[in-house]
Amino acid sequence: MGRAFEYRKARMFKRWDKMAKTFTRIGKDIVLAVKSGTADPNTNARLRVLLQNAKAANMPKETVERAIKRASAKDQDDYKEMVYEGYGPHGIAILVESTTDNPTRTVANVRSYFNKLGGSLGTMGMLDFIFDRKCIFKVKNDGKKDVEELELELIDFGGEEVFIDEETNQINIYGEFTSFGTLQHYLEENGYEIVEADFERIPNDTKQLSDEEVAEVEKLIEKIEEDDDVQRVYHNMG
Image 1 (cartoon, helix red, strand yellow):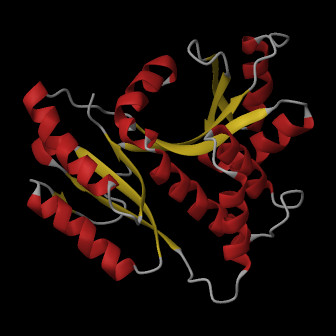
Image 2 (cartoon, one colour):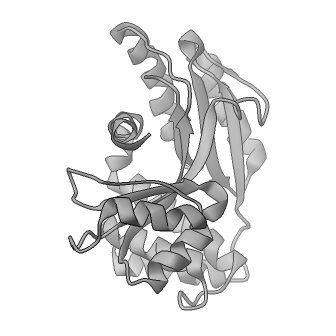
């Protein structure tokens, strides 16, 4: 994981730098957080960290406020989080996370992308042995805290790896998926400024492909990512 994964992640998510798509993704996450909790970030820990994500992505304040207001509206369609799993060209595992108000439409669309571009959609859970689900926190580095010492402190709270991202100079913290709330509480209680936090699915087994084969797989991934219902796409290309 660690630095190698950060490099791999940059390739995996190169299309997420499209601002409009990023805003849509965060907006849906905000709606889900409000619907499952409250519209007050002081009492809704998940919403609180999503507002930090929005800030880190330079999401306009008005867009954030619209998402919160939309979630509180009685006529707001209920979003469902759906996961689709399959194999792309050359046996590459692809996992798709979506947030949709019409799962029938979404699964039909995702299946069509796989079918048309050399892949096949499978069943939920079939890729559990390939992807490990983790949480990640990126916190401001004030230079006062020893990273190894912090890593030892966080072990009891579900933390697994702590290192400084050389590009951003932020402290990156990876932990168990189920430890998100515990880690968030610890960081907030101890004065760490959370810049961004999210969940990741990290492949524990990667496949190396030729440039031509990579291009085929990326064509499918890009098509899936263009779908408005799709939030994130993961794969195990090395």
